[in-house]
Image 1 (tube, helix red, strand yellow):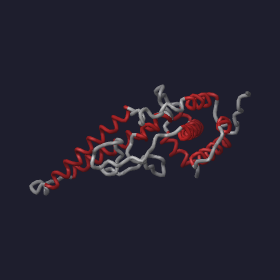
Image 2 (image 1 turned 180 degrees about the vertical axis):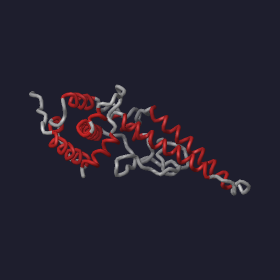
Image 3 (image 1 turned 30 degrees about the horizontal axis):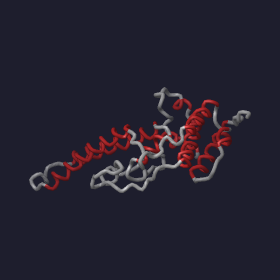
Image 4 (image 1 turned 30 degrees about the vertical axis):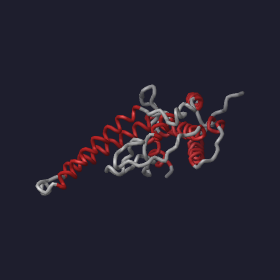
Length: 229
């Protein structure tokens, strides 16, 4: 089978990528050959490898293997929870109520903010399959700002926690085990977003990264917001 020709016009490629990303995000079916027309040879090979790995997240005994990289995020949540509890403990103490306690709540919010940044880094650097496993192990759906960055409140009730956590603030997760169709959908989106990043911000795309790292999709979402204007 002859290789799929690359659409040469860069402006048409960017516009076409944007249109196809929206279609896939909306749940429409987009054929692989239509995506390959917009990818370079290197990007096609990566796309092909990612598709060949579909199924690695399959359930074992009804569960998804826990990604240990999430430990660094949950560790920050634990630290922030302790600072938040200390703030409320002193606030309820009549002897300490009149003392300045602003630093305690600021400390807690600061750690929650760092945790939010860390979770964003983990999701952006993970390949599509691991990313789905991370989302599965969070106890609630993720919220994003208009710029494409994670956006949740800096308090114990708002931050995502580990699935099955006994915390009083934990929620019962409704995120199911991603099937092969959902995995394929996410791989298509990631492949096209990475291609757009390489065209819109080539210096960012060529920045040295670890072998396992993927393009920063949060930055890409922000960049694509700008080019829509």
